[in-house]
Length: 147
Ligand SMILES: [Zn+2]
Image 1 (cartoon, rainbow, N blue to C red):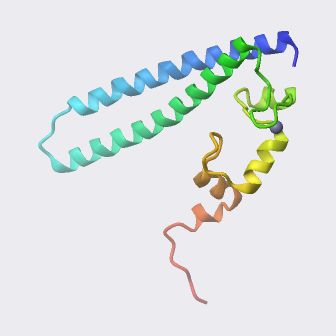
Image 2: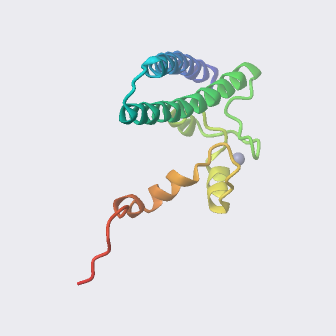
């Protein structure tokens, strides 16, 4: 990947970073509003707790993406951006254009998925399983029917 392309990606990463920071700030403000809303109604309180939980979960994803962006930006500064963390080879430009925060080359990523290492930073067992077998979601909560 040439310097010009890396600089372009750096711009995009910084743009995404500001966007994420804004989103996280908004969520924190929203959480503050929910927490300061005092209601004697037990049902309302339950809803508020659920909302806080939902917002925290959303914030988690954004914080994780923000971490990935910080790592990628650090690598651009170090001059190691685009190198696979596992084998040290160059990650293909096309892969980096598609996934700016990619930390592994295609080959290592495939190997990792084949061996299913849950400790890997890119690995998410729940969603991977659902992506591979969407019926996990579709069938949820439904009774099996005997004909
Ligand atoms: Zn590799």
